[in-house]
Amino acid sequence: MKYKCDKCDRPATHHAVVRVKGQNIQKRLCEQHAAEEGLPIKSAHAPINELLTNFIKMADGQSQPSDKIKPAAATRRDRACPDCGLKFSDFRDKSLLGCSGCYKAFEKALIPLLERAHEGGAQHVGKVPRRSGGGEQRQLQIARIRKRLDEAVTAENYELAAQLRDDLTGMESGNAPAAPRQLDPGTPEDDRP
Amino acid sequence: MTLRDISRGAGEWLRGSGPHSDVVISSRVRFARNLAGFPFVNRANRRQRYEVLESCRSQIMTNRLADNTLWVQLADSPAIDRQLLVERHLISRDLARRTADIPRAVAIAADETFAIMVNEEDHLRIQVLRSGMQLGDAYSQINRIDDILEEKLDFAFSKRFGYLTACPTNVGTGVRVSVMMHLPALKLTGEIDKVKRAARDMHLAVRGLFGEGSEALGDLYQISNQTTLGKTEKETLADFEAAVIPQIIAYEHQARQALLRQREKQLDDRVWRAWALLNNARVLGTDEALQLLSHVRLGIHTSRLDRVDIRTLNELLLLCQPAHLQKVTGQEMTPAARRIARADLMRQRLGGR
Image (cartoon, rainbow over all chains, first blue to last red; front, side):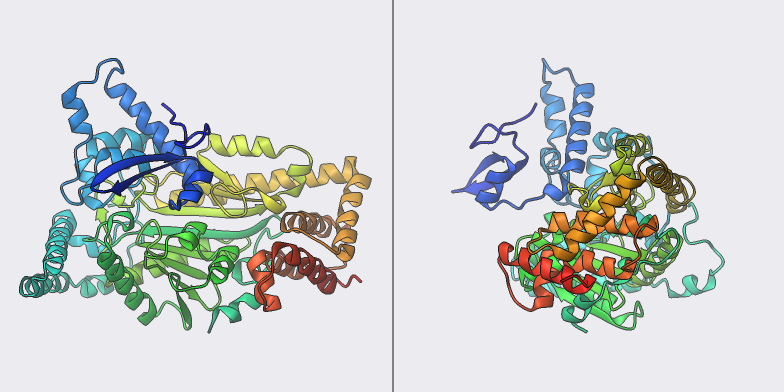
């Protein structure tokens, strides 16, 4: 379904949610009116966004018949990422995910999209950063501590913030990769895992 | 080093040298990277964005990436400086016009062989540029930069999806290989549409001078990959070096030969009219200037004209664009005044009256 611009008959290319007096107001605008309203113009990304939006709609069409929207399916699709709070519908509007955790949270919905966008590819086979040896668990842990740290700073709880900062420093230095890097010069940079 | 220093010459990607430089203007490789533990730029708050910017800055600027690296804070830069960087292909249009409250920056090597954008769509967008067809070289350099940055920065990565990016179209290797080609003969013979169709069938994007959504001004086209998941960096590169680009080069050469054989006078007419206009016009718009420069360039490569060298043409290609023109003349100008200054510049550099 294509939306029209709120202010004229041209197709809406810019979607934004603006918070006015505690209420979320959806704005759908064409290029010109979006510029007039001062919305960030992202036309440089238009083709990719369009591509993605089409993929997302196609995926939706497959997962459920359009005449009957099952409540369970609807809530599942609009579930929020536990790490950053991004909703799947936000992703559908902007084609941008909010954090690393989104890839886990929306994995099921993303895989068919990725396969379409990447000629069937859904498994990484390229370069692997040597430093991420600690793996996803460690990255997730760091992300969670950083989130708590941010909340602590906002709440001006500096004692907790200092403690969390120490935890982070400890985690980061605990995985110093200097030694193995130097010992392994013969490996091609982008060997498959 | 300042922006003023780099605005004078043509920079790395317009040196006019390198293999196949009669068709391939430049090669570019870009890596998209995000720091683990932070939300992506669009979801991060102000404090987190500053923290990302600072982590990246300290790692980029203190490390041995280049002898001389220029760090430009874009939130405090005047619009004309940002536009200048866009014209030189050192930052994206998106980074140039993001709202002022997003702290963002670019690190530029003095020789302009690399530019690292911070807080664009992803935390890091590393790009390496080369003139002519030199993808292998560009790839070695970007891989080295990536390794050095990775020693201290934790990149968001998953075994399944690879390097995690804000837009899922970049996830996996995060690699965008992009080759800028000058295809005037394919344009003149109308064969360019076939090239575009063929490229799309191969999951490649064909874009204009300034990337996504821009027009193919001056017969300049950027060909780039779209697939980043399920393919290694080397495979993506090999596709370009062994198949895609050599084919398009051969196709453009054929079109040039066909023009010479079948429409020699018409070709000469195009080339010499372009030359005459550049040497005599008093008012000249950017689009027209780029188109005329394109036809003169075609004249040089088909040996119809030898009154100017490619280096001068490349410099003019940059200097005739709005921000460069104003930087060179040292004053802000209205579009109308720029058209006059542009025509003056052409006559001056090409020896016209």
